[in-house]
Image: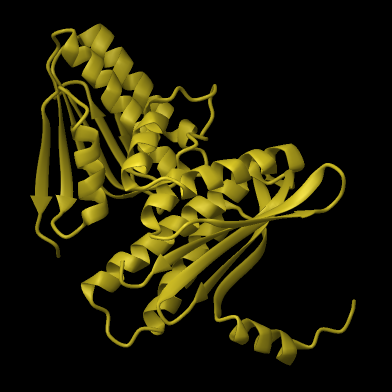
Length: 127
Length: 189
């Protein structure tokens, strides 16, 4: 399957979906006009990976701003991984936040509290 | 064209403490420019910039994005640029001594506006815990096919603002109304 590599723009995330390493990395800020258009290829990639490769998957989230619809799409990705984990698959999330960024920290914690899959909160020093 | 008294217009802008306003098609390019302008203006209006202010600026920008994208998606008046349709509306940001007020307005069908008003009123009645529960429900709710509208933008704004929404409906004709929505953000939040 084909990996996804997208550079960040002013309103969209840097995306790296790598089937060899079993990782999805999302980085930056996200408020596209059409969130569905942006996130659906990532969601399709994840489904394809879980079906065909059927191996460990790690989602690394290093965002500094998500609008509400991007948050919803990100949740759908994590929810897909959660279903895979509950069926016995290996899946985990690493959520990075700058130490004084309460909004992103809080968003991560709110996701984490409803999930069973390993969800790691990683604080970064502010620059 | 009618004569515009620019001095008078400027006086009104100053009297209302308007630091940013835009009327027209809320394209993504416009939104990005508005965020830049707002950030610059808030920083320029502030002599020293403690961390808490950075935090406030990010919150104002987040609310600006939600309001602008509501106009993009839900305004009854839409304009095409290439394949992308964006709604028309107005956004005004005012800065008082202790708080910012962001107000957006656009045309809507009366039936939709009534539903939106009821929803805003429902959100105003909820406390933090109730809002969090509703937010999580909205995150889990199935989206309509290929839709961006998670319905969570309003909950998100309400959670960021310590105060309730203020909204107003003005009839344009039998079916169409102008809906305006105000969100307040305390500077000390």
